[in-house]
Amino acid sequence: MSYLKDEHYIERVLQGDHSSYAMLVERHKDMVFTLAYRMLKNREEAEEVAQDAFLKAYSSLKKFRKDSRFSTWIYRIVYNLSVSQLRKNNKQMQSLDDTERPLDLEDTHEKMDRLEQDDRKKFIEQALASLSYDEQTLITLYYQDDLPVGEIADITQMTSSNVKVKLHRARKRLHAQLGDILKQEINSLL
Image (cartoon, rainbow, N blue to C red; front, side, top):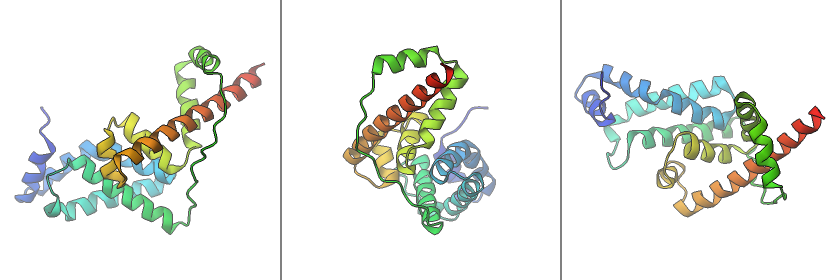
C-alpha cells in the first residue's frame, strides 16, 4: 500500500470521511510523542499532550491553512501544549549556559569510537537529558526528525537566525555534556 500525502487524508476528513484521520495519527504519532516527551520528561504527561494535540488538530482541521505542512502544524500544537503543561506544573526552565568548557576533541572522538553502539546511544541520551527542554527540542527536531531550520522556526515561533544560534549552543552543550559523561565513564573503568 502506498502512502498518500497528508493533504489527501485532510481533504477526506473534511469531506466527511472521519476515519481517514487515523492515517494522519498513525503517520505522526511517534514524532508527536517524542517531542512531547523530550519537553516534559514524563511519559504519562507526554502521552496526554500527544492525545490532546491530535484531538485539537482534529477539531481545528477546518482552520488548517495549507501554506505549511501538516507535520509542522501538529508539531506547533504539541509544542504549545507542552509549554502550557510545563507552566501548569511550575517546572522551571533551565537557562542556557553560555560558558564553554575546553575539551580535547580528538581524545573525545577516539573514546567514542571505542564504545559499543548501545553504549553510544545510552551516553547520548544521558547527555541529551541534561540539556534544557528548549535545547532538547531543537536537537530532536533538527537531528532526529530532520526538519529544516525554517520549519523549526515556524514550530517554535522563533526567527530562523535565533533557531540557528540556539541550535549551535545546544550542540556545544551536548558535546560538552557528552565529554563529561565519557570522562566519568573512562575514569570509572580505570
